Image (cartoon, rainbow, N blue to C red):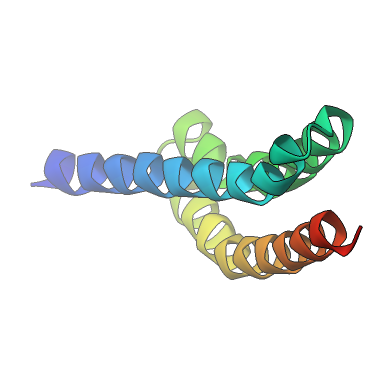
Amino acid sequence: MKVFIEGGFHIATIVVIAIVAVFSFLPTIPFLFKKNYKLANQYFWLMMLPLSIMLTGPMIVIIFNEGFAQVGWVFYFALLPVAVIYHLIIAVYCIKRATSK
């Protein structure tokens, strides 16, 4: 049972990371249509920043499997809403900047 629960957490982590990665790419699409690849690249890496921060939580779980596992998941789920808000702010800014000119 413990293996199943831990496996479910790892699958959920992979799904969340995949969703965040897709949403990191979406705001760069208007820049790609305007062939402004430099800005698209800059905003893509700006959007990937919360993903790398969020990966810290699962890495704590993987490295310190027993003792710090709860700390890792709390860290991960505490950063999840911060990452979502960050993505929304940057996405709105990207879309406004891409459509303003």
